[in-house]
Image 1: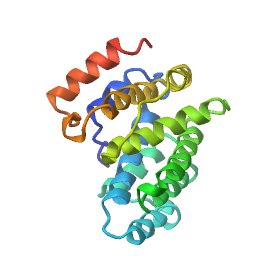
Image 2 (image 1 turned 30 degrees about the horizontal axis):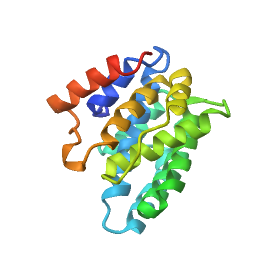
Image 3 (image 1 turned 180 degrees about the vertical axis):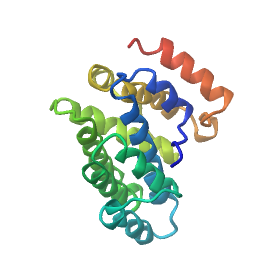
Image 4 (image 1 turned 90 degrees about the horizontal axis):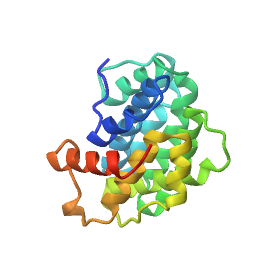
Length: 203
């Protein structure tokens, strides 16, 4: 099983995770990214949905590595009950595969998946996590987006600091044209992560 390749932003965000949760966040980032790759790059939404659906059922019985999503499921299995954690992410990315007009619904499902996996039960977290999930998806796909409200950032900061860091960085990127957004792992991305992560958000 290969470790998930995280973006510079995700690497930075892990520095703000509680030690007891860092491995779970890392595994969830890998799972999220592997499913996003399937959902957002397929030529036909139905093909992506079929592939994702397999991982909500048969694929969980005896998961095998060797692919991005297989390794990601094994990563989750190492730190949590993958049979409970993986299916909600599958449903979220199946919805996203239908296209931008379904992103709002997909973001709601994705927020629910993250909250379940992290055991976040505070009612006030729902809108904040959903706002991050929606913004992240739009920035990921180059869609027009607006940054998070300060109240949502503060809510994430209290209960899910790594997501607060990602939300802040995505909020910065949302204000830039697509061609000016930083590429993960680039020197610009690392500098932006340092400036906006270390100084832009007091955690």
